[in-house]
Amino acid sequence: MSTQQFSSSLLENAVNEFAKLPGIGRKTALRLVLHLLKQSEFDVEVFGNAFIQLRKEIQYCTVCHNISDTGVCRICSNPGRDHETVCVVENIKDVMSIENTQQFRGLYHVLGGIISPMDGIGPNDLEIESLIQRVQDEGVKEVILALSTTMEGDTTNFFIFRKLAPFNIKTTTIARGIAIGDELEYADEVTLGRSILNRVEFTNSFK
Amino acid sequence: MSTQQFSSSLLENAVNEFAKLPGIGRKTALRLVLHLLKQSEFDVEVFGNAFIQLRKEIQYCTVCHNISDTGVCRICSNPGRDHETVCVVENIKDVMSIENTQQFRGLYHVLGGIISPMDGIGPNDLEIESLIQRVQDEGVKEVILALSTTMEGDTTNFFIFRKLAPFNIKTTTIARGIAIGDELEYADEVTLGRSILNRVEFTNSFK
Image (cartoon, rainbow over all chains, first blue to last red; front, side, top):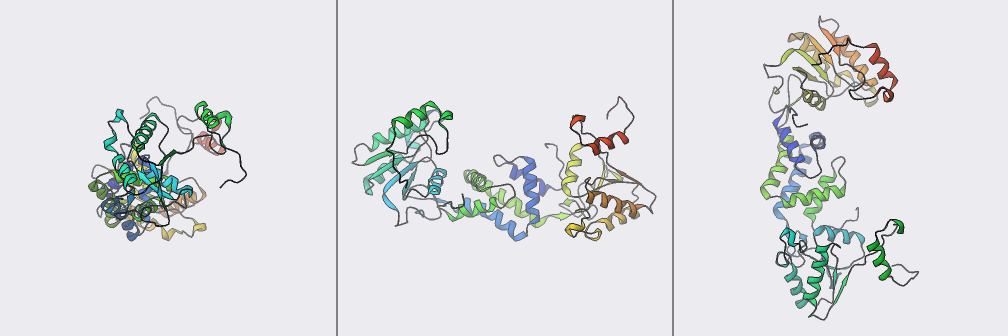
């Protein structure tokens, strides 16, 4: 489609803009633009402005560094949540994934990445110092580490764990094991091995 | 993802807007929005405005009804093209498909649909009258019908063919046959049958 002849440069521009997005090819971009052309002028204005406004006005929560409309995000400012439990995640997508489970009522702390010397990301590039500050100042009782189980994730876990050691709080990590619905046959050995080591008592009451 | 808890209503809005597009689910929408968040404010403004401007300023060529930035489109106003041959297509996507082949140097005529009584689309809803007018006024020598081979396409072809009968011009349709690279074994009988009836003389010079 590289030689595509557009009869309109406005159309060409719009297609090019869509095609810059990850995973959107030129054919899909064209399909999306033609869809927009069928919408009302008002709807397209709302569409375009949603992104412009988001990018212009977005803030990051001063407490947890999650994306927010205000200085302190919806979660951190919710008095109904457990302010003594803080779940440490890599990015805002992880916050959403955990929120979707509706199983966690505590607060978050978004690191903005994980320690990765290969990519030149050290502890000082992440929101680790502010996490320690929160633990120190705000009566946090438990820090849950919910980072990925990669070498970088493990390094970051360990770094934070050591930093938190002087404080008298509980540090936990999320459970790793065989996913619900998965068959043992297809699980990798490390996961299966850990799921046996970290076995839990069988009860009938799953909450 | 329907219960997704967004910490920002700006983010939620932007995701909702993307998710309105055909073929874009909420997960993809979120991925795209997070990508935009990483771009500069200027780039996102360019992105959003591309669609707003397109929708606001887009025109349709007064000659061929293709999408255009100006009253007469790039193709119709190009003196290098063959103004005596007009290819009739259903929509602007078809124009692009044919332009991509770089095999056609004539002009187009975009009907804006095909006759489809089931959808309540009659000849008067399409740009058929203006096609006849073009043939009458502008010295068109050949009309190529390039509509889909559905019942509706055939009906439209026949309708236009009858309308053009009084004028002394050539009316053709694009060749139907086995696609290049396809195996006979998998071709449907109608196509295969027609490709035998409409066989062409074998030459060594494929242009």
